[in-house]
Amino acid sequence: MSTATLITFIVYLIGMLAFGLYYYRKTNNLSDYVLGGRQLGPGVAALSAGASDMSSWLIIGLPAYAYSAGMSSLWICIGLSIGAYINWQFVAKRLRSYTEIAKDSITIPDYLENRFHDKSKALRIISALVILVFFTFYVSSGLVAGAILFEASFDMTYNDALLIGSIVIISYTFLGGFLAVSWTDFIQGILMFLALIVVPIVAISKLGGWGETVNKVGSVDPAYLDIFSGMEGMVGFLAIVSLMAWGLGYFGQPHIITRFMAIRSVKDIPKARLIGMSWMIIGLIGAVFVGFAGIAYFMDAPLANADEVFLQFADVLFNPWVSGILLAAILAAIMSTIDSQLLVSSSALAEDFHKAFLNKEASDKDLVWVGRYGVIIIALIAIILAIPQNPAYESSSSIIDLVSYAWGGFGAAFGPVILLSLFWKRMTRNGALGGMIVGAVTVVVWKKLSEVPVDGTQADAIIPFSLYEIVPGFLLATLTIWIVSLLGKKPSAEIEAEFDQAASGK
Picture (cartoon, rainbow, N blue to C red):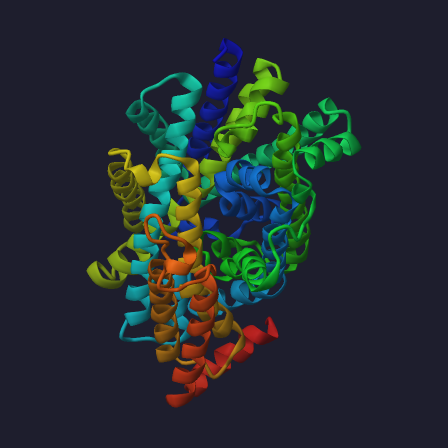
């Protein structure tokens, strides 16, 4: 690595720490630390939601998938775009209003307990546990991805790279809380966006333009040009369903929907939606074109690891200063998700365990420090999980698989519960609890039963066909909520009145 690239990289890291120090002075209570006092502007809300959503998957995983599959990779972009748009269009406004009506709820477990007037605290406990367990492993996978980047870029040992990357991310999340996370994610979102515009444009230009790029890709394999390649018959249909079903995950991702809760006003949501969707669609297309151009650019010496396509372009197409910025964009993608997940997890410890069970009279100052200590505790567990370099974490593609699993778990456990709690007055506490459990368990069981035996094929698995586990998980969770709610006693008049108030937007 050149000195110029190293300097650029270090300046970026120092800038992220500066945000943490600045917002440390502006964090006065738990609402500030967890939701920024509900004062997030539309631009910051949109880009921080997008950056925390996409993570390294957008810069590493999707280009790698497009490099391997060609234009058929667009199906996942279509599914994600539809899911994100529905989330912004229908969930954002209602969730912003309802969480304020429901005793000014500042976390998802807090909202669920208050929405259903659950005095047993079962909803709070189960939902907080789901968040803590899934996010600890999710954070660990992200820290490993960051360590791999540092290791490859700076010729460090794995453990040194893991330690340095973790310290930076933990520091600004610990200090500044939600505002630091949101503003750093905003900057990181811009950096990711620019990288995914510049890299494909320069690569395609070097190849002689779009027409020449398409011709070269077609000469490698005409199937790369066909969006329906490999999508024939029932297997192809299930493949399309699985790819588009990624969009279902949006409704249940705590680190994304908390941005809806934190936005300054429901009046800001249309502007935030326009910014967020524009960023997302252009970013997704740019990521696919990075991988697509890679097929042509590296046709004479194909990459051994598809996950390196963006890194290779950053190395061969740009001078060291620009390469440093592009490497920072990869780190930004990783950091923007980890910091949000750490914050949601720490808020679960502070609001949903400490305040709810250990010290109901805890002051805001005490809860902020519980949240900060929670960041350190969760991060340390995640680092410990990452240190052994478990083979499951040794390649970014397995990290992407882990992200897919966690995305499906959250989407199935929380997605139907959030949607129906916002739009179905007849839903009950037991319905919510049953749906959450069934969704999470279905994802775990389906994934296990779909595993391909060693030296076998999908047909040899207990479930002999491939279908993304979020699909059965989401459907069974929804069905469970509906049946259990109808079998139980209808909600109280007070709960129904709150629902009507949220529905009216007043």
